[in-house]
Amino acid sequence: MASDGKRLHGLVAATFTPMTVNSEINLSIIQEYVDYLVHKQKVKNIFVNGTTGEGASLSVQERKRLAEEWVKHGRGKMDNVVVHVGCLSLEDSKDLAAHAASIGADAISAVSPSFIKPSCPDALVLYLKEVASAAPSLPFYYYHIPRLTGVTYQVSDLVSRMKVQIPSFRGVKFSDTNLLDFSMCIHENKQYDFLYGVDEQLLGALVFGPNGAVGSTYNYLGATTTKMLTAFEKGDLEKARKIQCGIQEFITFVFALGMSF
Image (tube, rainbow, N blue to C red):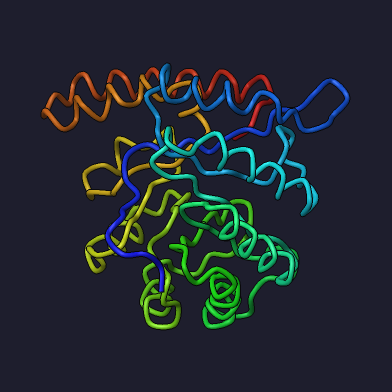
């Protein structure tokens, strides 16, 4: 069973993979990166992806080395280091999950396979169960991002299955604009953590009471987004809307330059 009691909440930065000019992973900068997130952006949770800045997947060995550095330098500074272990290969995913447990990660997460997609919700849950079983001591989070995977099964339906079949299931990183599905997840499953993953629409999701949010913009807009969360909690919707609109303007600008998240 996964450890009980510890919850994942607040802002979670989906980290970038630092690269050298020779397109090699720049592990030497991870310690500085951790300190920057904690002290400058006030973010103390990270979601370690297994991709480069261009969205290309790293090899399994590269992902292991990257996870090791984040866990090592995040220890004592970060509240949670969540390692994404999803792969097109089930065996690779299980290998990464077991490795995450061995190095002391706080939790793991996996996205649905997307090249050969699960044929039904039960097939997806079976895949996730196998991944989670490789690290039974770690909380497991399903990473829902249908825009990239093309897998559009209702998360509220998946949760009803995962909480029965996956002992270590703890929650969902919900990167979709379907707020009906998102709200039903939260309403029906208060004991689990649901984190919203569409940075530019976070304010709209806050009314449903998510535990937190996961996003790449929190790497450099974490402090700004925290101000929005504080304004919302105080009932200052005018200030919260102003901050969210500023974030949207920034994201629209960088999208126009060809950047993606």
